[in-house]
Image 1 (cartoon, each protein chain N blue to C red):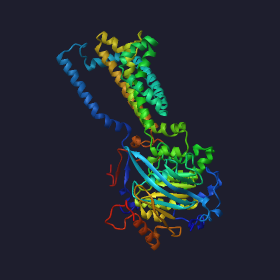
Image 2 (cartoon, rainbow over the protein chains, first blue to last red; image 1 turned 180 degrees about the horizontal axis):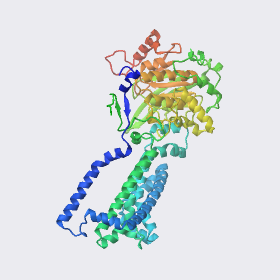
Image 3 (cartoon, chains in turn green, red; image 1 turned 90 degrees about the vertical axis):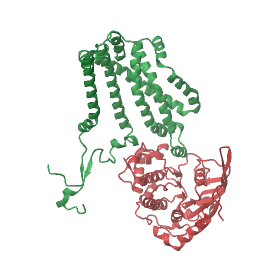
Length: 303
Length: 310
């Protein structure tokens, strides 16, 4: 340890790289996957033993069959729901942040209009949705509108909280510089609020799917052009329970995709932020040796 | 008396690469030109050559319906190019006083003159280093230093070149593209220092920015700061809790009382510069520390109340 001559080089600390991505993910995913397998086997066996009819509780194998048989219809519906919810979410981000900026720039505006944003949040969306259909017609536009309304508030309230959470000393610094209100917004408040904004977006990402499915329930979109919500409503009416569960599974998959997508984007935008510290920064700089790696000080075993 | 003007530029130095600061003088300044060094040497007699002049500042604020008397007739004057410290019990209003000078706090009566002007916003001739540094964590080290240049008309390439020069002055070469969370506490202080230099302020106000540092880092930052002040000929007023630090760094030390704060003593430190930590054993240093301790009412070690100076 005290000498560094080449003869004992093997005794110097060596960095053992972390296991490859898939092995790492495999290690993380293994316990829940094992639990899922056990659950599915118990389900399958129990339904077989109890001899329950398919419309009441389908076996996992029947759900799998339903996915395979209806894969094209299912994929189309998932795609349409994804399209509607991403449109709703996108609009909610733009509107939510824009409204937050306007309210954040002026106390009067915030005191006047923020209560109505809360009211919009409190009114159950199912009571507004039929109204939307009457106003803007059934189909995609209403579905997007429902998704937008349901995703809007978390983004607005989080962004507003972020805009208000400015380091008072940084504010003083900008005052010393004689910065305009717009400059304070652009260079200080908005960038500083990004962790909050993105937390809101992550909450709203899940909500936007719920909003889209609810919108499809109410605003329909028939003729083979419906999304998952539409699929759920018709399969439920026909007691196609296996197919219904397949649609539920598809919406859950969509939600998981959004979650990881949101995590990825957050990591890119917030490379500077403590919350992404363990991930290593996007633009070089100091990197920790890496989670999962070890520093080995002993001579490695001959392999 | 104006010891620091007599130092040849570049002759000061304890390891810190402060020499390039002077070279930058040629570039367009963010502030109006100040008097040349020949006039500076007459600082003792010419009143207009003051960096700070306050006369009987009174400051109150209302907290929980009670009127708090914070500053009680604070009169302070500091010559251009001088380095001074403000020392006193915590919560006595030192920071408030500093913020009044920067135009960040109001006051009820008295007069304040900072570099020949009233305090106000948009003063790039005043550099303020905050206790929490007020750096922007979403910016890289370089982009943090560039911040002041974004509020004035300035060529981007020129601004970058200047920012890089100042980063090198504070010893942060090669750290331009690091985020703040990737660098140490001492390095963040250096970033804040480089940002203040970027605005080419003639008066630096420091609100205990070094208090969170460990002893070694603090010492090296202190030395760096002294060098930078000597090189840029900027005046500086440093709020500190450390008597040793105050004496080591300053040409004069203002001792403040507890609330309502008054200046109870003004100690001139005539230890020649450049100073190193070795001056801390000299008689002049020890005497100054003793005098400040007694002005703070700390002479009796048993006595912990500093609110009633003799």
